[in-house]
Image (cartoon, rainbow, N blue to C red):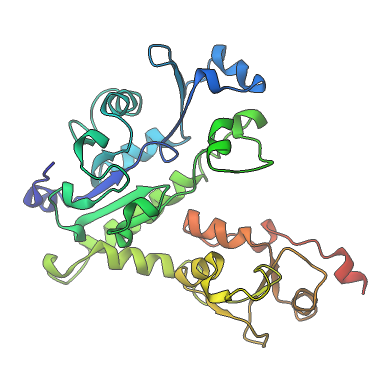
Length: 318
């Protein structure tokens, strides 16, 4: 698949590569619906589609139509999925019924040789012009600097099971959904608007501009100015700097430390009754649950610390 680079640049557009499953949609077999999901078979929801000829049911992610509409003004959109081509075409019809956004730009597992990996070289466009949105990092081994990793959309219980989310009910089982205006796609759209603006409102020559550097900078602005100490988050004798939460925080621009001092702004813990957590409360520092970092990482913005509390009842009674 080829993009006409001169056409992209003349229209002030970039290229946005979109995964399907758990990124824009969630699909399950009808036979895999649990008893408390059976209601979905006959439920009328505008973003829920039952495809009997394939024996599947698909839920579109909230905000996806608005996301595609706005993103298409800044990017040429391309679907890149590990699913079969017939499935990809069906999903494209649901997402883009008027064929305004994707046209023929659909890459399925039938179109590339490495079935367990995705690579941008199939696009034949400079990687400096391409952003990828996907829920799986490991498939983009060669192009991770182009990747925006999105939180997985698991509407159906089969997805929770497939990813090993134990003791976790799916959105359909809970009878709710992601927030339309403040969910994953809405927040990532804001990041894309910023990156697109920075790419084209730039004094450097086009040849010297690179979305990968802009992605990195935008990500590092999320928690810039924060200094974080973790408490009872990592296993004993575990190299803290190797833990995914530590790496997430550093990627978001935070400074991570193992020692307390007055420059620390946040203590991250699941336990409010330990030495570092008590110190945070006593010194007026933020004490937050690890999910605060995860939310910032997947939604590209710093959340209010009060939204991610740690139980400090014991801590305050001491």
